[in-house]
Length: 197
Image 1 (cartoon, rainbow, N blue to C red):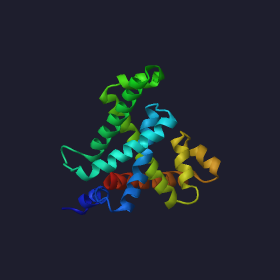
Image 2: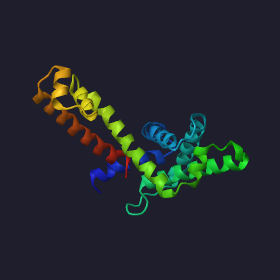
Image 3: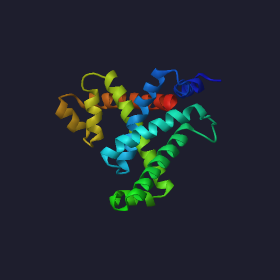
Image 4: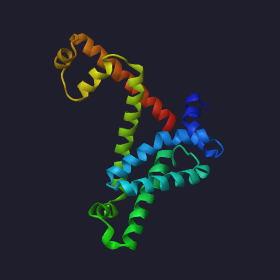
């Protein structure tokens, strides 16, 4: 078994041991924000979202000891996506049954959305979440103007404009942007290896 394989499974295996409280804290730090992003993108209201996040985390905590990784059949993120989707849809269906008039338009839309559409939202939010986590790590590595250069380029500003704004030469803009981009790609790969399998 390769080191990469061991790294990929480490957090999930640790969380499956319910006696490892720090593993659960690590897990929540990686996944809670992602769950919140999916619910927000699905237009779940903030006060409902808090309860739903807790319900999803509880289901994950209860379900993880039984989760078994099978490379071609049961990727963890697939299992997690199904759990989020089903919990969200069950929540909205229950809400509608209790009080049909309380279901807002966005809830009605969610109830009629196909599984594929929900999975697309989950996939998009996962990419955004990984990129955000990686960017936080990158900003700790680079000091000075490197991150500013990179963010300005993401905003669509050209090399010349960035150089003039930050009072640096164009070659420096190119070098700094390339370094940050390269490191960001490495951080995303590292995160994928650690928390996505």
